[in-house]
Length: 429
Image 1 (cartoon, rainbow, N blue to C red):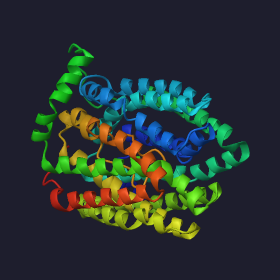
Image 2: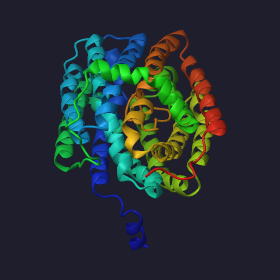
Image 3: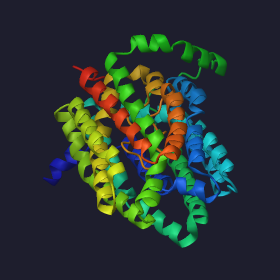
Image 4: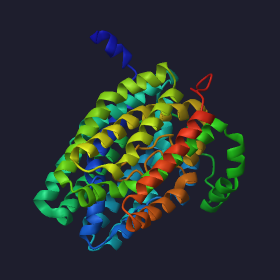
């Protein structure tokens, strides 16, 4: 039995091991920060509208950086791009650690948005390093390990905030996140290996030329891309829109409207992580054996039932059930959607296509952040920015309104999956 399991997971080596370590360490510290980031804005004098503005700024830089990243990913060292982005991320953390007001947080979020340059090369290396038959379980395994290690992050962060208060406590958490980027940059520089042939002799065009070719080529890109890829892109986009509208306000709604304590909210996120850890690898196996589309359909149905139900929650246990539903949907969705994008897109086009459409993944029911990450593409930037601003406006109008919007977006996702997404007859290598 042990030997069979060892053989089944024998593909988890080389770049996959390094990417997994980076994901594990990164998620552990990011979850500590993102689970309570909105409270930091409030602690330095911001309000719910300014939370929306701050979350809208991070994707803005993607309009510039995603096209550049897509070009560089297919033509330059992907590892060097990742390392440089990690180093620059350390600098952006200073804006949060030293922030005297919410405006500093806004500037830090904008600058951090430029670091999306690392997402297309990371996604491309991941896709290149997984054989089609192992993509579902491989992505699920990485996610499971990361979730297992980070499941205590919200609880640990809540303890830090209780000890030091929201203002000082969040600065401590952002400092730890900055140290994580130092570690990740060092690890990538020493251990990560490029998966494509680098042609450094090709001259680098100007940024204006890259942007002109990229945005001018969008009609051709959409015309030449299969309907299934475009539909998957819409599904992911609607997920980002949902998160843009609601993710900053989960903790605010839970603590201010429902009346949960920060510790109760942290414990709920702990149980959510445990369930996601238990379900993700089996979900990856299901995606590999029974099909990606079936997993996506199930994920959307569970999302539709669980996420909007927050407006009916009246206490700890009802919120817990809702977040367990989000965990189930996320475990089903992530390995299937990410594997499906890799199945669709040829190796030589992954840089450009993933710069436009992202990795094919998005967090389901994100409770902080959720409007960025490797799943983002430049085609999503403006809608995600708008959704973040709209989320703050809706919450000011009525705290329940963001979750009405989530329900609408989830219905659109379900329709796209049912009508347009099919597993390819032959997956790309």
